[in-house]
Amino acid sequence: MAVPIYNFSAGPGMLPAPVLREVQAQFLSYKESGVSIVEMSHRSKRFTELARHLEERLRRLMAIPDEYAVLWLQGGATLQFSMVPMNLKTAGRFAYLDSGVWSQKAIADARRVGTVDVIGSARGVGYSELPTWPETIQGADYLHLTLNNTIEGTRYTALPETDVPLVADVSSNILAEHIDVRRFGLLYAGAQKNIGPAGLTVVIVRRDLISERDVPSYLSYENHVDTLLNTPSTFSMYVAERVLAWIEAEGGVDEMERRNRLKSERLYRALDTSSLFRPLVTDTTSRSLTNIPFTTGNEETDEAFRLYAEARDLIELGGHRSVGGLRASLYNAMPLEGVERLVDTMHEFEQEGHHVSYKNV
Image (tube, rainbow, N blue to C red; front, side):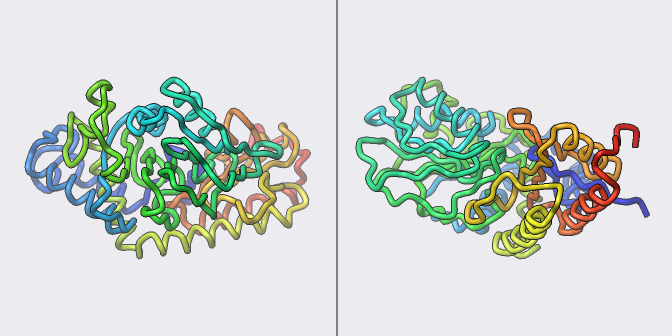
């Protein structure tokens, strides 16, 4: 029996094997229709039913109240860096917490729309310490934060108490841990980590925040409420519906969070006790469950381990290009066995001597 390949990519991330097999089996003829899902009209009865099931599953999994609209968009989370301020602008003043690379990109785009107040910035090497926030936030249309920082490996476990709507980028932890939707005015996420393939973005927005806007038609939330404005990412929506069905069958978000805690605790324990590897985030209260950056402290040794692991079918362990080092992303589809094999491989690498070159393994 072939040894499985474990993909630790931060995104597009690993998808559940049963879903991939089902998609493969259905690809040429979706539900015996004789038509592939990739050539099916998004206005057809079959696809309309699929889109309905997709939204219903997400609402059940995240306990999304009726007073929130669910929008299926394109452009990734990056497009939301602009769409959020465009659609929530009233006074034209926005508050942001700067916790890393993605929040910095969101801040840069929001500044094209209005005035940005950065009310807190991360500290520490590699932004490893989350920013705090002031007790009161006045005059802002909303407060934005990145709930889980994919690159830096940090996550918020407490939320600001504020009278302004709370907006969060949840791309890398949606469906991986419990998120209380009612605490937020708006949540957005790229799909390619825990939902499905790249090409799909979900926005969960409180309906009272949606209003008519003088922006290009696609960029207005109002035009996407309870409808598909244009041809969506049909294949991505199809796979996402199947992934959500898999999550439900496996026990829902509570079960995903239990597994993710188990996986991340296993890897953090190995890093904390290793004589060679160390985690970049030392504050145990803000460590991500899904994205774990680590290093040996030496670029050549980091690269040697990446190649050593890759030769043993553990792939995509390189750190983000902006920070280097190593990173393991443990999204929902990553089984505990993958983490155990990574830990064993780290031990083997240490025992064999990290000074050895593994470039030709």
